Length: 244
Image (cartoon, rainbow, N blue to C red; front, side):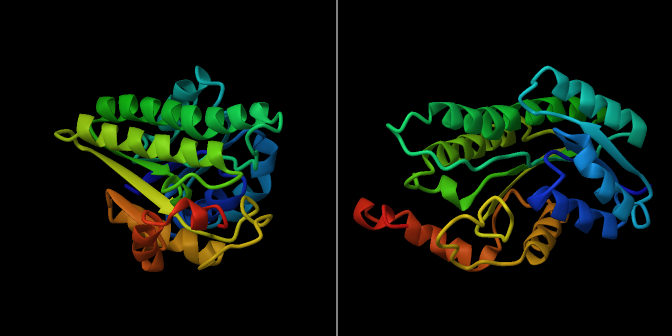
């Protein structure tokens, strides 16, 4: 039987790219986004490749609705093999400028919404006896970036949570994968003045899909050069970090 994958935040960016990658590989898909109308064109595109494409409205900050949507999709697809907690935002907000609402929204979506998705997925996987949770973080989790403090904090927090899940499920038939993308060309980062080592969305999501299928525990995306660059970033003094 073909595998199934559920993707949050699937209407654009990395979520859309991953949907296209897994459809091309013959997976059954459950695609979620806050506005399901945004998924209609994507669903039409993918139905020729995928055996089944479901779309569902899901705001990951409506925390109580997350388990219900995952269970509904699992029932429709005969289970979920992979759940990708991808929904996220990147709102530039510097401290002391009255933008706490933007910072709170970033934390609510990226961290709390990611945890809500992960928690619901793990519960479902335990009932199924199997499953793979994939959490999308970022190289921004390595350090606190100027103007992106809440974003960096949300991704770092989600990465630590995923590590805790890996400990909790160590002896179970559950795989926890964390992927930390560098600069992949999507709407999320096109407003940035600098995007070093930029790769196309097609290449970035192809690498991500390959890593998910390999059930890795953690990888930067793409692994080269970010695995090396990450070690360098950890050592940068604030005087240099502030300019990035």
